[in-house]
Amino acid sequence: MAERICIDGSFLSRRFLGTGVHSYTTNLLQHMEKLAAREPSLEIRVLAPPLEEMESVGSAARPGFELIPCPAMRQRDLWRLGIFMLAAKRLRPDVLFLPFPYPIYYKAVRLAVMVHDVIPLLPAFRRHSLRALFFRQAYSSSMRRADLILTNSEYSKADMVARCGVASEKILAIHLGFDPNLYPPALAAAPGAGQLQSRLGIEAPYILWVGNMEPRKNLLRLVEAYGQLRARRADLTPQLVLCGGESWGCETLHHLLAQPFYQGKVIRTGPLPSTDLSGLYRGAAGLALPSLYEGFGLPLLEAMACGAPVICANRSSLPEVAGPAALYFDPESVPEISAAMERLLTDADLRLQLAAQGKERIKQFSWETCARATLEALRAM
Image (cartoon, rainbow, N blue to C red):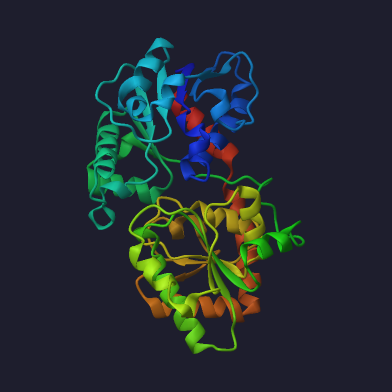
């Protein structure tokens, strides 16, 4: 059984705030530290950015759990190209865990890699750039050379087996969790929610979308569906709020949003801290997630935890995560998306039903459960 575990913590850096991998790494380490405190023989050492470059991970420094600052992480490209393996080797761990795929040119220790999804390998969502080529190399070599692959969902596991030829027994699916302190139930109006909405130019009612803007998120169809709704139902005056950063492939979306018809109606907030995002969830008529592909879909849990009804695509991992607690639509049908948005806004009973089902659904997900399953898998290597 592995007792000395080394973890790459480079995604703890502030530069990754707002990304799913930052959230995953931070929450995983917080709960791993608490679980490891009960195991005196277990030693977890985290290769971390220099302390001034990261937020507190909320983990207690103690014998058996150590953050090791690595100034070499400032050279991000060199770190990912192999310095991480040298840094880990010096610690003589039983296993090295990467929360995100890196190119693996040589392997000095037993290796576990978290492959959140296989999106960079899918032709439909492929970017043509040196950065995209790097990611494809990282994913391919990680899956080939890792001793254990972790992933977020059974859907992603099946995709790796079918599309990438990875042996099923080499992959373990572990669902993600959510922070109930950041995303509490909507028992009352969120403190400061009015000021936040006013600052961002948001007025109720509004439909919320959360994520990183890129083609697989299907925002073009979401905005078109919203436009159809406004044209069809002049008595409804919702806003569409798009919350998140921008990745690539958004030129057509920018052109659409520049039309006067959408001015003041579609609000782009950019990335927001979790405290602000929580307030937007709790004030929203609901969350719309029309993605063509998701490895998990963390906004589903965040919305359900805050009591926001969910409408989402019937594709990839989304039904696995949302279960019965969502109204589903075909993400390639603009009229279906538009009809789902209309039902969300006009059917109060449906909103109450989805909110109640969401509160039940999230009982199946927690970061503690995710950390425990991850730690057990690493120790069993």
